[in-house]
Amino acid sequence: PGVNTFRTTFASAPGEAHTHWPWAFDVVDGTAGSVSGMLDQSTGFDDQASLCIRTSVPASGRWMATTLGPAFGGPAFRTARRYRLSARVRTLALEGESHIALRIHRSGQPDIHHAERYEMVVSPVAVSGTAEWQELSVVTQAIVPEPDRVHILLVHKGKGTSWFDNVLFEELD
Image (cartoon, rainbow, N blue to C red; front, side, top):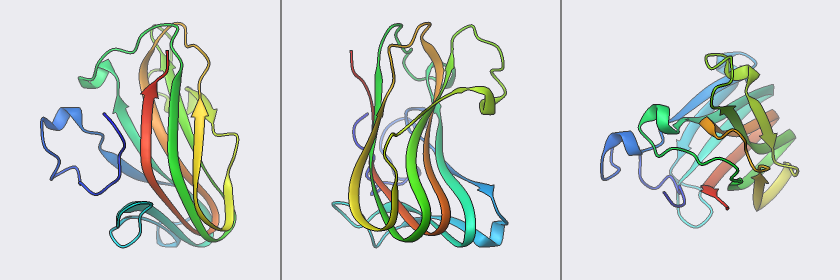
């Protein structure tokens, strides 16, 4: 719960491990050597930590938190609720764009093991070029039936560098 600032790593976070969001990096397009994802402990929005993606050629990568919801020991999502994802994003010489997104699977729906078929809700604003920290957000419509899984995606497309910080996922109503 609360804002993920990346000051605390998964291994050093207090409390039960099943309550934490493990972040995973995924190369979406490009070769593994041309795309890298790392915890940057020298750059952050309001501290010295953030998640970073660097590409040396036009390529795509993303940071993902994919264990939110009752299937992973988290609290159940409630029906007819809206959800908001917000994050701070900074870019350096990005010839492309960075954005945030929610990937949602609804209870009782097919294709639970095919994340590429989940519903996507992408931030309407993206960051590109060289930009200081900007807040991006995405809000879902009321979700019926309720989700059983929600994935948080921090996406980088193109050549350059992106940082992501202060990630917050919350129920609105």
